[in-house]
Structure formats: structure tokens, C-alpha cells
Amino acid sequence: MKPYGNLSSKHSSWPVILMIYNISPMLCMKRKYMMLSMIISGPRQPGNDIDVYLKSLIDDLKLVWEEGIEVFDSYSKENFHLRAMLFCTINDFPAYGNLSGYSVKVHFAFPICEENTSYLQLKHGQNTVYTRHRRFLPRNHPYRRLKKAF
Image (tube, rainbow, N blue to C red; front, side, top):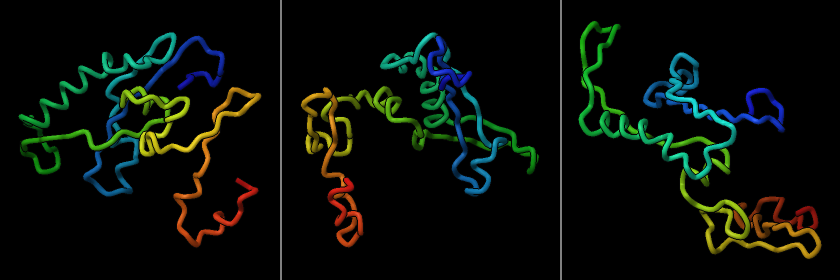
């Protein structure tokens, strides 16, 4: 995330936001139910060293999952035992590679397909093009017949 919208910025900020998913879908995306747990900030993205930044958050989440913590519910005016877990991550593709430790570059860029990824190396451009992506569409989808468009 470039804080000033300038692609040549010398600074990078990665917000780590926790969200509550066991409430109504209309509520879970509201700002008051999102928790900014940390901001990873520096001259460049954390890259594969992101685990160093996330270690304290992971340790806290493990504690809350395994042992739980006593929390006060202001609505019912009583304490309850809270347990929490990391359900999923939502991130862009480069961050997905950093978090999973999987290479998302060059020939096998798609973690789901892995070695079944179909690619073609362009002769004059040094670029990799991924092909056969229409195979994931339903058999009767109109895009399957548009071979020249893809």
C-alpha cells in the first residue's frame, strides 16, 4: 500500500486488520467491527520476512485460541470466555506469495494449479503468458467459444 498514491514513493505501509466474522454480514464490514492490529511500515515491503512482523500477532492468536481470555460484555454486563481463530486472509497476489511462502512469479504462479499451470514464454518479450484459463469455465459458458478473444 503506497500511502500517498505515488508509485515511486520511498515508503511502504501494510495495515493488518482483524475482522469479526461470527456476526451479521452487514455488520462485519463496518469500521467499528474492524481492528487495526498493526501497521508494518518501512522503506519497502516486508517480502518473505513478513513472518518476523506477524510473529507477535500469531503468538497472541494462538493464546486466545488455545486458552482463551476473560472479556467483559458491556451489553449483558457480565464476563465471558473468549476464544478466537484466524479464519482466512484477504490480500493481493504478491502478499499471498509472501504469506504462504509460495512463489507467485514466473511459470508456476498459480498455487492452486501448481505444476499443472499452462504457460507460454513469449519469444521477443521475455514475458510469461498463462493459457488454457477457459477450462475453469462451465462447459456451456459463451466465453469457451471465443477462442480468438482469449
